[in-house]
Length: 230
Image 1: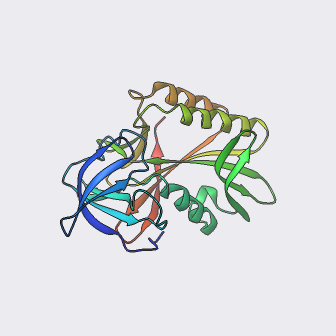
Image 2: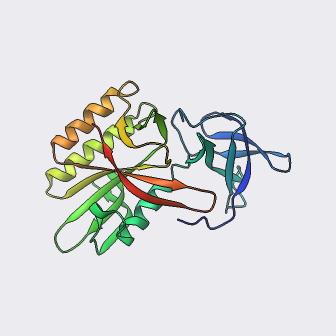
Image 3: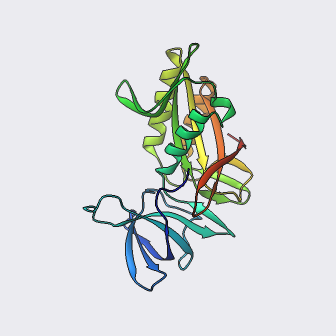
């Protein structure tokens, strides 16, 4: 994924009220950026660290910038939780995620019952629903999810179980927006209920895939699949 407009560099002053961040731009001015990440952003916050923002396309939006990434541990970490959905969609359409290749129909935001999944895929043999989650937290060599208690995330897993019960393929796809980790795991100390629900989903036949994306101010691209420890 190539950013459609040139990103604007600066340094992080602070993140507050979950969805806002103060950023000092290179010219010394301070702007308020929208933060799409509703989690704790543990291991993704470092005051004074370089960041990049994207300008808002809507001139009427209150916050004129969106926070895209931060430079931590000698590498860029993507913090925009909207990006993984687009990355996953493009990768599935392009066939670059091996386990999700071979679909002739790929759609975004498709309803299933009272829920809505990020991606729906179909070919002559099967129908598949894919839920996508952004992963940015790092502990040691592990990328961990979630970084905050997520009741919504557990609901998505329960719905994936229902998809599988109805004879369709169900996939939980984690997109890790950092390159300084080697394996995906679960933050059981943060949300044990999510970990238990994921184990239940796997036992019911839900597939779990983790892919790692390289983040830079020019583009974000999926590089490889990572092993998952559940």
